[in-house]
Image 1 (cartoon, rainbow, N blue to C red):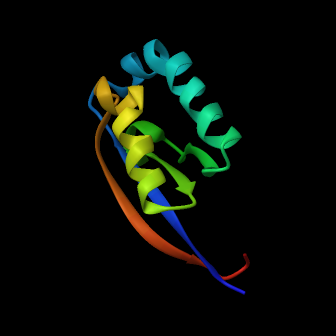
Image 2: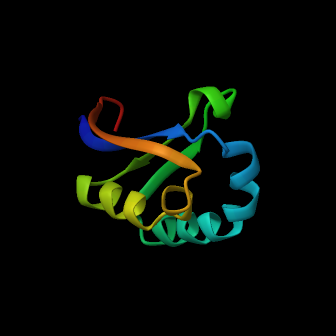
Length: 92
């Protein structure tokens, strides 16, 4: 049976390679919190994240929007913009 998930896509900011290490610890705390609450299913960077960005898969649009709004990577400009897409996981 398929299930709708919500994919949060991050575009990297111009200073991602400098800023990401500075804010990574706080970002990791948030990642763990959302995972522990069962809201975050997967998260990570694409190959060449400075060019291709990153993504996360969450259980609801609200969770995806909350994650992005609170993420130190968004707040501090590591991410230049983000988008949330509904995605049908046909293997779920």
